Length: 205
Image 1 (cartoon, rainbow, N blue to C red):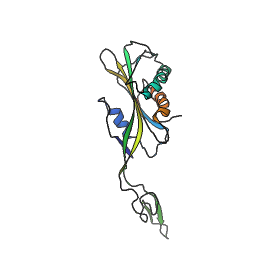
Image 2: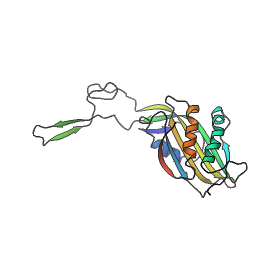
Image 3: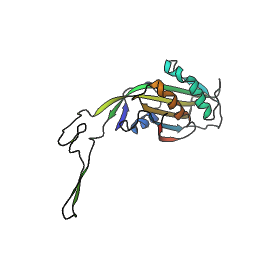
Image 4: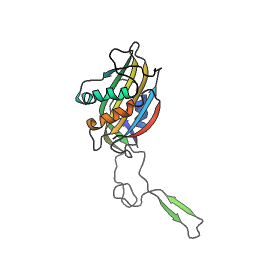
């Protein structure tokens, strides 16, 4: 399955988020399993101090403010005021449209008596919850909508606004709330500051 965001909250570079949701298999992911991507887009000195810049002062942001500082410092970058580097972070609950690539297929094998002929029929003969030959089509909709927590960290130069590094993470809010899982997602993304990550699957605890 492939997921597309229904709404865009801020006009910012969307390459990472598009890639993130493209590879996020919502149906296979556990409630506390996140996908994380990251990209280096400029020189970053080891141990360079940064200034935190939250997107707003909503309850969700306030709940992770101190944890964000600790997570960034664990990555090797002390948090200070008025530094050349600014770490902007956002955390949004978003409705995501999950599209099915096709029917969920079962498999049966047919063997001829002479053992020379074999055919594999890729379909469900019977299922109470999936499309099948005898049971018919169970779900005529080609998509469903799920709620995700999507978090973004962007490290930029203060003097010209140029990107140094950015990372993003997404986790489906199934059985957990955004506030319950936000700190763990913060840790997962901040631990990858200064790294290029095409896609990591991370179990949040």
